[in-house]
Image (cartoon, rainbow, N blue to C red; front, side, top):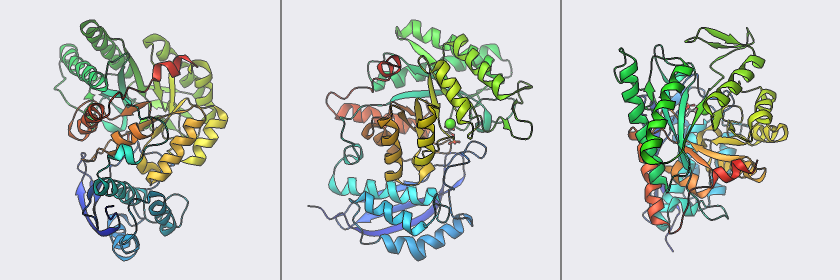
Length: 425
Ligand code: PEP
Ligand code: CA
């Protein structure tokens, strides 16, 4: 049996896809295993208010000091194959409820890095090592085609992500290819419709269009129809409003700067409902600010049988916040981002809680990404219904390509049956 005990941990700072400094660690085991892991990062204005802070209160310099003095020495000699013990140690070293002392990115790179180091030492794929008791499935990629909100500059749409998902794709590879075709087609349509469009992209390699949200959805609808005709496959559209950024608590209204409109929560509910109906949306994430469980629940009661109402910033991958949402029936799906909660075990527990109560987990990247592909493995291991990892661009396509490799490596693995689940109500 290979020796999975941790021999050495190196640390440094590098830069993420947005050019922001981030923490990277390398973990070496006594049995010769190696893992390199860097932390992804959400955009200011898009990171959830309730997620773990990224680093120690003094930022990366204080974090590095904590790593050198306390955290790395405590981890040396621990068994990388005992994920629960590693994660318990990180929680106790931190000593706060939400990684406020050492930071959620700090704990996540160590937690995921340890998992990868164990996987490398034992020569067992990460999705197999972290698998729950159910047979693995492939998450369907939800592709961000036109961006806006906190991920864009200039007169982009107010909402953050205008997305597509292939219905009835034959394989994960096919679903990825369809999203790429829609992305390409949408680019050509934007070029034809907007004389000022110069092919600019946002932080997630979605097109940065000079359009409001309805204008973006109209282009997306045209693009998807063209690809539907070419491919003979149904494609549906979705939105991430990232509504915290639209919400003005002083006014008590959602403020759409590009559109020049303000909406009360009741008007927001009607507006989002009208978009679901007009564009036959199959997915709506964060339609309300992250304290408004009740408006989420109203939208879910009205549309949850035909459209996946998904919670991201409001649940923040956090067990207790997810429990509240489950009780209030606020959403039928939730985003899992490991660094919102800070450990593999924390993310797994929240995903399992959701799944037990019929709320489907969706695994997601961050807008500032790295070369790590672990979310592909986590999506497979935990039967995530979908994956949010953009459509193209270096830090995103590598995660989608990782799914293609898993599809090839696991005989008989299928896409998660999300449409059956939606239809079952
Ligand atoms: C999101 O809101 O789903 C997202 C990926 O953005 P960020 O990483 O900026 O929070
Ligand atoms: Ca989101």
